Each structure stands twice: as structure tokens, then as C-alpha cells.
Length: 77
Image 1 (cartoon, rainbow, N blue to C red):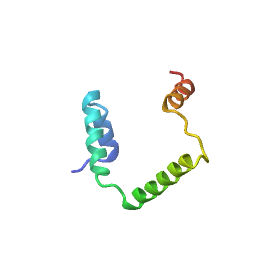
Image 2 (cartoon, rainbow, N blue to C red):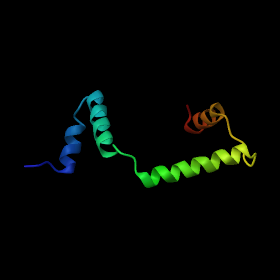
Image 3 (cartoon, helix red, strand yellow):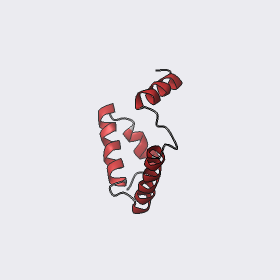
Image 4 (tube, helix red, strand yellow):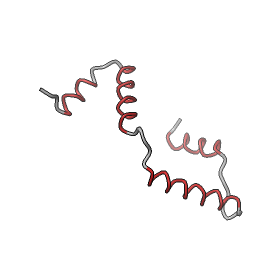
């Protein structure tokens, strides 16, 4: 007899945190093993567009340190 989703979740919540994380990693990896070609192509096009905007001076990039500092301030860390 197979378990319901609710039963599986209930059992998974009984695992120690490390094993729960391992289970999550396995399920995630098995679910998303191969990238979707359409999504990959769309992201490639978007990335090229954004890089071109920066190189042409139409937009100015924000340093990663500044972005992270703003995020920390928003989330309170």
C-alpha cells in the first residue's frame, strides 16, 4: 500500500534536520535534472540584453555588496 502525500510529509518531518535536508536535495535533484531548453534560451537572451544595456551605458550596474547590504537591511540582518 502506498503512502499519501500527507503521510509522506508527516514521516519526513520526523527526520533529523540533516536527513530532511538530504531528502530535499535528492527530490530536488531528481525533479530538475535537465534544464528546460526553452527556459535556458529565454534566460540566455535576457542575459545578453542586460549585458548589452550595461556595455552601451543605458543602465548602470549596482555592485553586489550594495545589493546585499540593502537586502540585509530589508530582512533585518
